[in-house]
Image 1: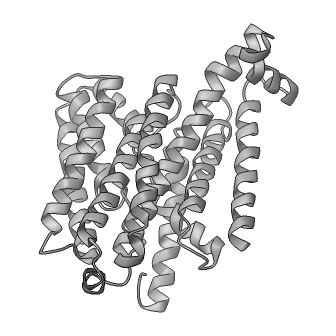
Image 2: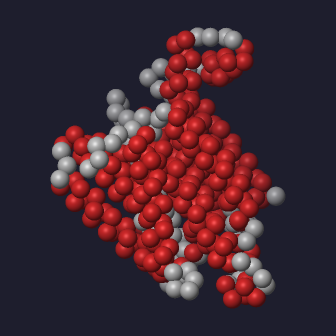
Image 3: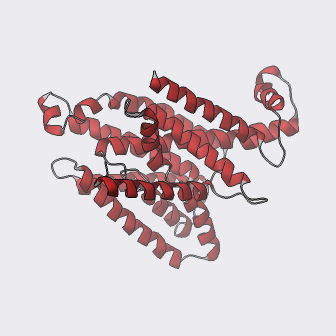
Length: 332
């Protein structure tokens, strides 16, 4: 019952935030106008000005915020659950850095832009995840080893990005930095379609592989004794989590800390009542959408990238987590 109440509360907050995202802007649109505009493809009612603002500007941005937030959150909670470590999220262990390094390489060295950069970022995330997995493999996967190797790989990729900046022209650096921060300012309907289609495939796959978590959480030796295919289930979940992070990063850039904070926040709300994958997805969507609202409207005549807001809040959460773990003597 508690799980349902938490889910209902998060869903209600997300719906309210979505309505605010369609309302707020330089040209406020009232709720009746929003409803008429959303129903215009069915009813035939048209107001070109309102329809353009709602359907072509604000709606794709809000949907992309919801989808990307959920994708980052599901990816983060999957890594954190598999590796039993709250630091094991894509933006901490190097996967987002792989996407960033690939995107910067595409912009500065190859001269790519637009959708091509997104595909490059997707490939970079996958290759980085594969490298971390292979480097961490020693007859199996050890969580502590994955986190340490991931942090090391992330540091190397940051150095590679810095080197690429030293050989870039000013306009290339500006373009790369705009992508690196993570932003919804250039949201396109095509990004929504690609990310939505990816999630339609990956989320059901994740739901299938999650069934193997019960055995994995007993420990590898016990799970194998029970006949569970531990490495297959772990590898499947990791591939799905990497895919979600890669597609979300390709759509909106490496928005920091959404993957990191969503799982722990969801589990705190649940107070230990279950793993909280659905709740983490709702938290991730809510964090992304509210952060984008703050980024758009906190400063007059300036639209900040959403990554600025999530980065600031996520850094504070990381400091709190480290202080709390220091008092208890461990990070779990």
